[in-house]
Image (cartoon, rainbow, N blue to C red; front, side, top):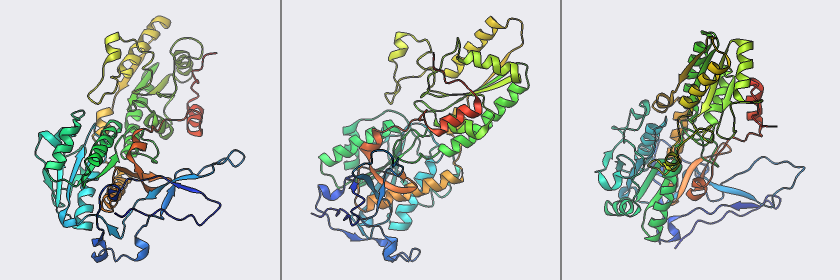
Length: 456
């Protein structure tokens, strides 16, 4: 049995703690193969082209030298091609599945997984799983090839179709085993990743010769550790159109308010970045920063003053904001969606109603208009922009290189600008939330002049 060697630390001033990464040789006795990239005339690889176990990426790069410094630095294996692989490409049967909601770039990831396997490694048995996790055991897989996926990156949504729920561990792993899949690529968000961890663990328990990789998909950018999730930049770009429309509507009416609800169940990254990019926003409400409506320092006092000064205002609210102050029944408090997440009430509709109640009570007889825009499904369904398309390509190819090299149970993603392999469990358990004490949120407060919503 062979195991990947650990890098030697030749620099006594930098103690590296390499995060363990699952490998197929942890429970299987496998013989390595020389990568077909060696004979691919498009690459003309040199020794510098390949990465080894000594190539790592340090997780944390910013420190305050006046404070306590860690005795060691956590690091991840760097993503990329290896000279030795653990699969014979002629015997690979790969499965690709998309789960959860839509996100710009899904089809690009699928396309590039197929292209990477086909063109770089010569794999010819590649299958798409339809309709999310339930498709493993309830539908026939779709055979994929480079000709079929050629233009998929120009389409929104996912050609493979997707769904929430349908996770049945035994049925899924039985289907993987029965259909002879030995590489599984899972594209999805936090709920999907938690399922992927269970699939990986069960595959290990059964000691199957199956590599599992995940590509984190969340337009909200709420996946931890990695720099950002794919589709996020496209979402921020498209959100500008909704904010611009809300601004035009608001300034075209006396005491006009434009209200825009953007995606963000548990984090406000889209709302924050759209606010900073737009400069038309007067107030940004996110899940990480509680707010209240009435009284000194509340939203209505702020809007009253803003309308007196400018005659209009634009509010951007993330879908997860204000959920703690929206009235709901005991039954509504217990509701869960198919992924097990709490069902949120529509903060946009609720806030629009509260704005109208406030104005009619405090400004009787004065003209007032609220224009509410919810571009959620328009943003989710668009094609990825150029930046996200490139990003999706690098994610997919990183995942292919990792699985072919025998790594498994990992997520491919950028850490400090370089692509790494991160254990699935770490990603599934880590959230990327807006830090309301950092410079970006201070910048939001500066350009909007909104209150901090902290009661005296």
